[in-house]
Image (cartoon, rainbow, N blue to C red; front, side, top):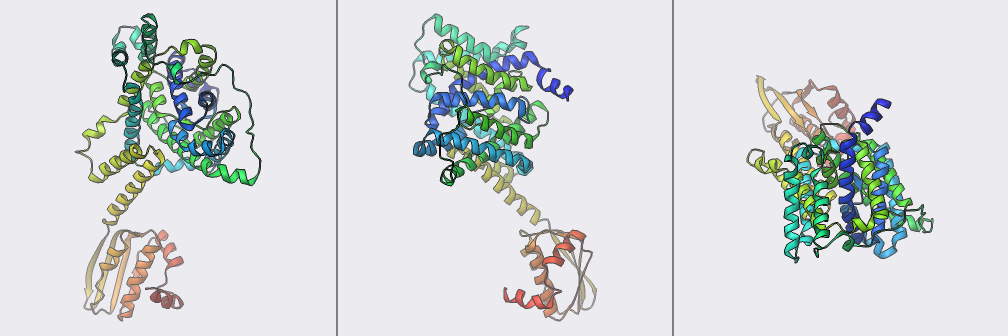
Amino acid sequence: MMQTMKQEWFSNVRGDLLSGTVVALALIPEAIAFSIIAGVDPKVGLYASFCIAVIIAFVGGRPGMISAATGAMSLLMVTLVKDHGLQYLLAATLLTGVIQILAGYLRLGDLMRFVSRAVVTGFVNALAILIFMAQLPELTDVTWHVYAMTAAGLGIIYLFPYVPKVGSWLPSPLVCIIAMTAVAMIWNIDIRTVADMGELPDTLPVFLWPDVPLNLETLWIILPYSCALAAVGLLESMMTATIVDDLTDTDSDRNRECKGQGVANIGAGLLGGMAGCAMIGQSMINVKSGGRGRLSTFVAGFFLLIMVVFLDEWIGQIPMAALVAVMIMVSIGTFSWESVINLKKHPLSTNVVMLATVAVVVATHNLALGVFVGVLLAALFFANKIGRYMVVRREENAPGQVTYRIIGQVFFASSDEFVNAFDFREVLSRVTIDLSQAHFWDITAVSALDKVVIKFRREGADVELIGMNEASATLVDRFGVHDKPEEIEKFLGGH
């Protein structure tokens, strides 16, 4: 226990402190922007980001991953806030947390094994594109100073690591933010700053129970929003955890992460914050800046609060161009450039799944919908591919006696091919169907087997099934009708 705590919290103190500071600075404008999207005061997003990051550092299942208020979640809140106000949003946030905790105990995090690598790659590429697109308003209809500072910021980010000694331990994004802020202040450059995004809070958050009626009417109002927030939040968190796992070559506890996200959202709701989840952009900043442990996540949340409450005058001076440079770096680093090269090498079905996921996420800004489309296409392609691997071989034993050997998987995608492989017009006295190399997966497959057996028997043949494995036999015994005379008439009547 103590060894695990030491490893997760204090094995990378310097890297976690520095990376957490960078993330805290990058969280400020995003939290404000997401609050504006949701239609609430900027402090709602800032308090939520502080609370979620600090709590998830202790209870989350993925060290080094950053959770806070996010754009995907804020988009789902717009209608609720517009129609019912902030108090109902806080109530929905609490219910979101409860649903996510239940998801953790139901082990829904294990469902991530059904998400293919192509879907994950598409998700990553789509988020990289969305992160870049989110910076475009800051680069549109602006003076040349903005472009110059953004370019200079990118130069610092990519070149500073090559500076001897200092470049290896000081995160270049942090250097970029400090340097660009100093330049803007010394030369008094008229450029958009963090303070222009919205008013920063000047007080610490306080415990706040949502001022809503505790009745069924309130529940029916917030339940649809809470379910949507819980689903999108868990999906984005699970996908982000997968990406951070790959980057750090470590494993995460996804079901613990589900519970942790739920506890964090309950905490956010009780402190006047909105629901949030893991952030791939900020997690990438953290990892690329050297953050690996839970301390980096805690520092990001704690420093965020300290900065916006006690250092608001200084934080407000940070030019948005510096933060835009950091986020452009994140988008470039997040995008899987290898996937573009692999378009020529990977199967067409893999490419279609990846590109469809990207297209849907970018077009709708709905991460859950994009992943759903990707998983659905991947499942359809897989079913089609496995269905084609089934083979039926005919062997003649004696005049009027044949053996059909079934090789492969029989399920809904291959059941028609299975039935069509038999010649029912042939006059036979005995038919043996060898199932020793086959497996029946579903009721559709059992129905196909019934159809074959009954058709042969109707033509006067004696049919024998041999070699069926135990799992298939259990399914056939339970749902098959070819050996149940009282059920055959019903079966024939339905066909």
